[in-house]
Length: 340
Ligand code: KG4
Ligand code: ZN
Image (tube, rainbow, N blue to C red):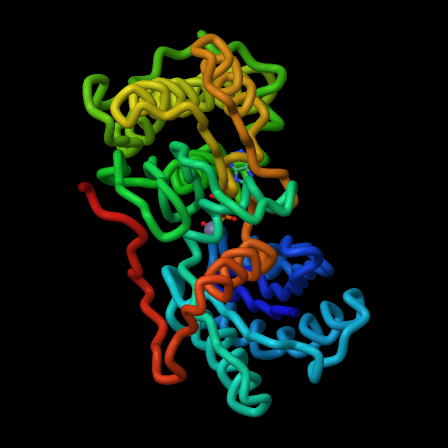
């Protein structure tokens, strides 16, 4: 049993293959062709540029995934693609290609929620065939949420951002500081040499389980304005990055730990691009350890957008015998979970 999955929701063209070996989903190949360099000169993702490049790259990415897995297209038993959320013109490229493969091969098609891919991705490293109950913190460029997970497909929303996503805040603040896109890794790098207590940035909505990062972003802007002619470089840049990163990390960790009480979670996972951040991982890991809660982070290679998490999610739906209709459409605003 082999599943080929495509991911084109934003600026990564990705393909991956998962095979079932001894009843477990085993990742055979995961190819990611990043367009970050193309978008960097614009300071963010340009949808038109993204979709055009997906259509140029995707076939080669698929061929590479097949070669690396030592499989041919004829040996694929199911085709999956991200159906949303994401940029509509980009989603359409991967979704249409996977549907085309499925029609031609008369095999099932799986339209997968990108956020469900992130949510399950921490379990990919152990090829888990079952998902235990837990609280998932998903922190990506477009979303920030905590979700109580009972099983695959059984999710309830605990908290979400009421304005910017954590990754979006990293990207916007990096831009203010004159750092290139994507801002998260840049800020993390400069923060290493900075003092996280140098600037007292706000931690919004202290008593809520929801998140808010736009006040923090505005506070960084006011601070920059107050620094007037000072050049934002060296130690000053490092201190601004460290203080901002600490403010984001404090909010994410505090609310996640508070949410574990709400849903009596014994396990916490973290996924999405921002989960590459080592300061965040260390703080959440320490907080969980203190409370006797198991902490399972996503491997860095599966944190930013990839097709392995889409193939993994599709494998669970294949197990359940739940394929998607060939007339299913993409949904740029597809949601994952509601409050129960
Ligand atoms: O999950 P992802 O690859 O794409 C979306 O689905 O949005 O997340 C991308 C986001 C970007 O905002 C990027 O700045 C952020 O993840 N990011 C980081 C780090 N690496 C990537 N944020 C903080 N620290 C990092 N090391
Ligand atoms: Zn993502």
